[in-house]
Image (tube, rainbow, N blue to C red; front, side, top):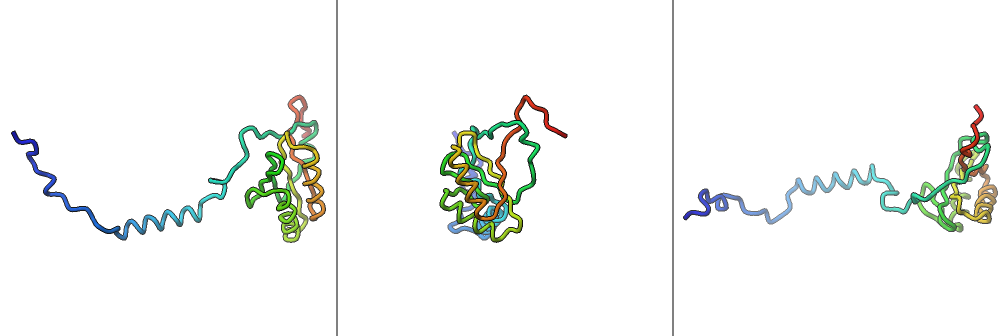
Length: 147
């Protein structure tokens, strides 16, 4: 009884012993795309799903456009455009950004669980660096925003 009637295994090429040029072209293109289009937030920690802004009446009335944004998800963990930093690094970052940006303003997106002492420390460091500071808040559900 013939189990392999076409004997296809004998007609196949042997495996290549080296990597061909197409492999290296593919690797180069992947590296290029990850470099150009990659995000520093892909592997970095981000804001958790339990992040919530505080609510207050009239929150939308004082809203204005800002030049810089930081997010504070828990005490001691601050996210800027450059990644996660602590309070000591924040003061240096604010000084650097305050010198570079004319009429700098800072939006602080602090979670509702952040202690007021931490928020005050961030605000005073930002004002010392020359920033106008705004604290992010949501409009209360029971109020109607002014037009």
